[in-house]
Image 1 (cartoon, rainbow, N blue to C red):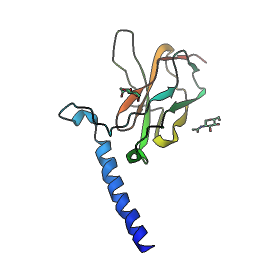
Image 2 (tube, rainbow, N blue to C red):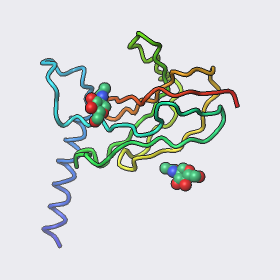
Image 3 (spheres, helix red, strand yellow):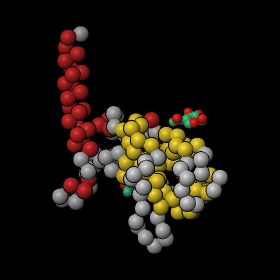
Image 4 (cartoon, protein in one colour):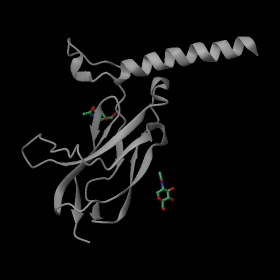
Length: 142
Ligand SMILES: *[C@@H]1O[C@H](CO)[C@@H](O)[C@H](O)[C@H]1NC(C)=O
Ligand SMILES: *[C@@H]1O[C@H](CO)[C@@H](O)[C@H](O)[C@H]1NC(C)=O
């Protein structure tokens, strides 16, 4: 009992240190090399062609099958943006996250579609220790 409690405590310290490292933005990596522990879950919904009415509830999902154990307790932020053709600017609305503080390991979160202008090039970006964007989808007037 005593030994296993100590083991768990030691593991927690290691996990906390690991998540502190993971939380460091990838842009601070001076070599520019890919860091394999940085986890970018792939968004699986919305997909291209989806259409979300303003005010509706929608489920955003992502693939957690390749989630490293270091990311177990990580929380995420979901941002809405849009990408115009021929541009890579994601126009992320960082002031109004669609959702935040959820567990990335859950693989899904429900959001209410905000009152934004209708467009057909919206994306959602899941930010954990680094970002990953969905396909483009539409938001339409309700
Ligand atoms: C998003 O996730 C996919 C699948 O894991 C990966 O191939 C891609 O590089 C990621 N994109 C970014 C911008 O991290
Ligand atoms: C999202 O909403 C659906 C339908 O109300 C519900 O079945 C599902 O459990 C919810 N998912 C999450 C992640 O809250």
